Figure (cartoon, rainbow, N blue to C red):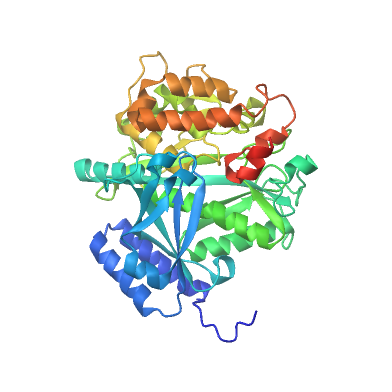
Amino acid sequence: MTSEYRDFLELPYAELEELNLKAKEQRRKRVAIDVIQEERLKYLRDEKRIKAVTVLFSDLEGRLHMLDYDKKFLVKSWDNLTFDGSSIRGFTAQKESDLRLGLDWRAFYWAPADVFGAGKVLVFGNVIDKDGGTYSGDIRGVLKQYSQEMFEKHGYTMNAANEIEGFLFAGIDAEQTYRETGAFEYTNMGGYYHSLPGDPLREFIDRTAEVQRAMGFENEKDHPEVAPSQFEINYGYCEAVAAADQIQLYKLICRQVATQAGMTASFLPKPVVGVNGSGMHTNMSVSKNGKNLFWDAKGEEKVSKMAWQFVDRILTHGLDLCLVMNSSVNSYRRLDPHFEAPNQLNASAVNRGAMVRIPIGNEKSARIEVRSVAPDANPYMVLYTLFKTGLEGETSKIKNLRSASRYLPDNIYTAMEDFRSAEWTTTLLSEDVKARYADLKQAAADRCPRLLGTIVKTSEIQFHHAVYNQLLWNQF
């Protein structure tokens, strides 16, 4: 089809980065939403080369959904974007299916045309209930509400940055076709920090990093990880909701860049036995008036008493939250102590097998690192539950809590039992949302062998939430 007559928005990467960083700074400064809203709507009206606005939202399990609205329609109807919630797993029942999308104008992105298509911009949405409030099953909205509450009550800004590992496998849709092939094919055998310029993994990392940079991620470093064909592309800190949005975009960008190259970016926690799995180490801190409240030059490991209290509360509720941080059957393969797995329910500055690590830091970078998070978890639920637990949870009277010999579950069934029986998870999520989430996890688990064994089973991949579709589910 000829493009001779089309004039759709396609901006250079440097210009994209400038626009996205400006939007990110407005978000960081909490510029009034009515000001941002009017600015974005004016831009959409004035920029004739935009044909559609891609609205992104996530379901209860963290699966990203995208729908395109015609630009002219959205400008006129942005405050009444309805959709059928019963079609989204974990959302409303069919008899009460009408929901609305409320646009988060602060979470607005200009995207590279060669990755997302020409003439499009992106914006994240929150799901609005029939009464006009935040829909309880939309954890992004719940996290956003909690973040605002902490800022208004205490002046706190909840900061996060995630180190997300993944694998690059040969072939398109390698996860979806695993039931036919029974194996994943590596694209690189180099290992930690090692790949030659121009090899498939290095080219993928370089290309993905370029896209992230253009979208305002503020990249820090990128490299091959320990396992063959494994990668990690790191970027900077930001406020918790923006951090969770960037996790969703990170995985989306990786998958799209890989697909365009005829490969698959996989965020299964342990797609191959015998090599290291993939994690999503979650670095967290709290600041007030620009000051990092987790820093104390004279404190133990140079972090503050507040930071250690935050750690103690997370350790206290570690079993309660394990299903949130490790939400798939496959993720429990990763919690294997033979591969630097963070399955010990304790905290340490040096032990990488600990659930919580205290990295070396300074006044700017002091933080805690929760290492037992899998990359397929719902990022909004992870950050919401960890921050609220760290700030408001209980502290156990277990002696030597930070060094006790306790372990996270080695299977999803035990994690589900802990999650269902915990009063704290009801406090966090409400009885209704908690039950719906646990039922979704139960349904996936019951389609897989109860005992993991030493071979990755087809059902672990087939019913993994990131590759879920109705056809595969019904074929089981």
